[in-house]
Image (cartoon, rainbow, N blue to C red; front, side, top):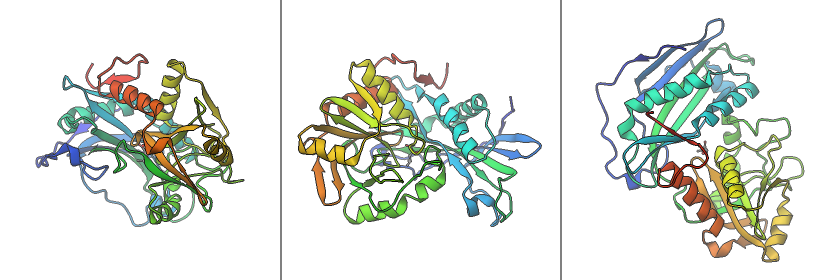
Length: 357
Ligand code: COI
């Protein structure tokens, strides 16, 4: 295993005073983890250093061709003050799946989790003490070679930065308004939809802007071929409760295999609910709505947690779900998931990883 070098900051920042007003993703802690990859040498120079800017050549390949991948997970503080993670091994496993698709070198998953824990031990005080807030963790890798030809790079940086954060949506647990996108597409068969790579998010911005102009928070993406089958929201996976059955799009390669998605499916099954992963046409959703069978719609994600959807707009049709209130299954999932994450209920699944054993 690589050895980590430690260079600790002498100018510690002031921590946020009001943890109920953190917002999402704009405050960063004092330190970050960094390591380099150089062809022929592999991953090297693992270090924890003060959080700061990165020096990059203007020709760095990530800036031109987007060879980049990332992950998102959180550290939670429990009532007894200890810190814990939720299925962090799954994030580093998925990072290697994304790396393969983007021709980025594989990481040592076990080492990366160890490095994250080392960083968290230094930044432990940054893990919020307030319910509803957590320390968002962003591992990412990008190509640094100064070269403007198109090829996989020979040099990369892997970094982990940390951000004390509250709810991703300003609405918190109140239902969000989602707009079904029928002009743009996010992913296509054989593309990068399943990978956590910057391009998937850049591509989503135009649709998101148009949704915002209509006062909708996010976009629900349809498949890239027929623009008929529901895929995901981009910042979260999507679930429908139709006539008591929990339904979510099948992972066909163009949908992100969310860890919260996977956990929500496992929790629902354990609670005895019927769950299907299958293709869902948007017209099926509209029909279920018209027949009064669309009980709930919600999104799942690390940042989004469980986000109920109150309005779904498809063309001129506006569907108001469950009277714009959080539904029973969404609430159950939110309570179970956050209950485990904040250590309020026992972890029956073996998903919680304490920071300190
Ligand atoms: C996450 O949920 O961690 C993500 O990476 C989604 C991102 C849009 C915040």
